[in-house]
Image (cartoon, rainbow, N blue to C red):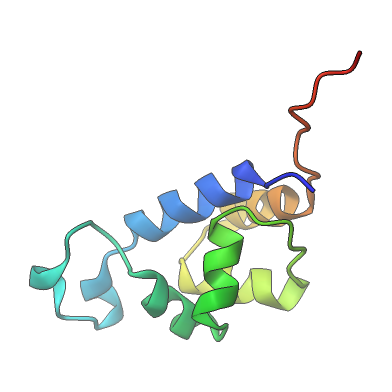
Length: 100
């Protein structure tokens, strides 16, 4: 199965956009990149770090509605972003194979 690059790109971008200070995470001085760490987002969403990492890598996983809602809450998504998250998570990955 193909990777879901749309979901991967969206999750990475939204995770980077979250301000850890707003969520009560105060160790921002030790961060190498902006936003939440994968571990922090997984904990906020109530999923394992391994599962979240596989989602963010675009692995062929179909997350449940409750997982998507938990991620949307943790990422503080607005209504349009929530709709997009659900849509991109359900979208089959585009095939890169050439037909002959």
